[in-house]
Picture 1 (cartoon, rainbow, N blue to C red):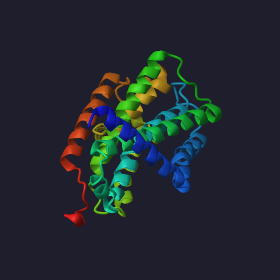
Picture 2: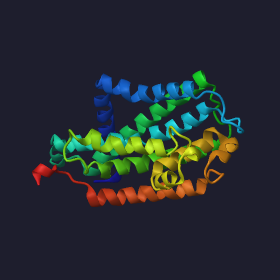
Picture 3: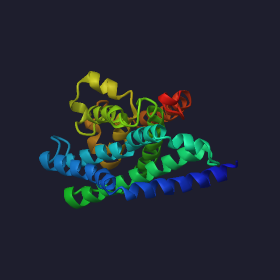
Picture 4: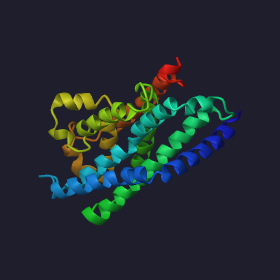
Amino acid sequence: MSRSSVARLGLSRAVFETRMFLRERDAVIFTFSLPIVLLAIFGAIFSGSVAGTGVSVAQLYVAGLIGSAAMTGFQNLGIGIAIDRDDGTLKRLAGTPLPRSSYFVGKALHTLFLSLCQVALLLVIGMLAFGLDLPTRVSAWVTFCWVFVLGVLASALLGVAASSLPRSGRSASAVIAMPFVVLQFVSGVFIPVSQLPAWLVNVASVFPLKWMCQGFRSVFIGDAGAALEVAGSYELDRVALVLGAWVIGGLVLCLLTFRWKSRRDG
């Protein structure tokens, strides 16, 4: 089958996935309200500016939560695919003309759509409620685009690979959500990395979320916030290197670990 056909069928699958998601009103409300609620809580509790920088705390949290939103594919795909495997959806899809690659394209596009919506909401709330100033330089938006694309792609591939960890669809939420929450706390989403112990920063540096948040801080905080980074700069070249490495590594993990059948099917 041609690449255009795979892409077309993948887009159709993404539309199907999105329609199914929108029918689950509780999931829609929770998915889009959670980052807004977190921003409102942290922005209200930790108001003002970071001492000696002029950087508002709201700016820090917007950048961190955007990184978290870009990585929701890890959680969404990890849980969603584990459930599809457990309830037999993957087995049924394997017996249809739909190319397997189109299934993953559809999942990835659906995840990209959700992440974009979350980011847009965070930016609007940040501007309206916390005085967030959007960058005016084209170079900043270029940085935003490549960090976002690499981050979403790396997260989606890791989510696909992690979907093989849960023993069943029922345990998927617990198995996938826990490491995601831990990463949020050690990667600069809720707590500035400059206030974390060095060993925790070293652990977070192994994973993509820390670098995604760092890249987004360079966009929304700019030069004034560089002093808050552990290295004293945003290290954008290193951000690109690590995220690119995780894209390749995530693809390798998917090829090595992904299973179409549940453990009870052998």
